[in-house]
Image 1: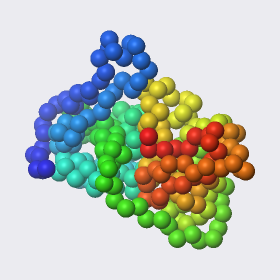
Image 2: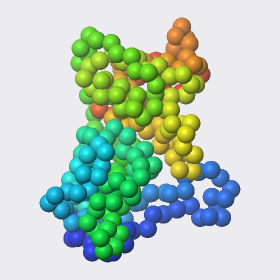
Image 3: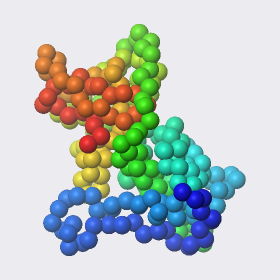
Image 4: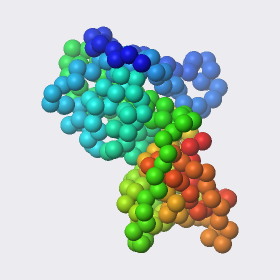
Length: 248
């Protein structure tokens, strides 16, 4: 795809949404997300500021101008790799983080118009990667011989487990509820964060050295969960009655 010139539009590209008549009869996600063409046009609104004020407003310091540049060029996989180098849950953060009070509140474009839709673009690259059928081959980390327990399988627990797995640790995640995911499953309504995206932990996905133990788990009757896309191949040991993060 061609690299677009700077888009000086004062407003964001509209977010496609379900028709109100249709969504009145379901609990599905309201916002439908950008397509590739719209994402590139929105990324082209970035002025590539030298001091990167948007990054200062991001709690996990995502390299925002760099990933927006890749989106503008149409290199979505590179954009995904840049985002996930500091953020393990881009599909979730792109949907529910208060960007208007964080990164987008610092965007220079917001001084005389609307800021760049950073959250919408973060969501786009995560969803684009998840939808790929030809994902890059995942590398399994070399075990370092150490075991770690993580209490709770919410966003913090999943991120911690994912980072430890990439360092070679054998991780067991303990969850008090029947399903893993914490607030992503139990605290956010489906029309805001559909179950599809709450089970998209990206680079926080469990590795072959990760086990999930929930209140529904039966250690004596375990089953392997489907693989999750991440920098580690996924294979969590859980009972058939419990649910681990998947890419479905």
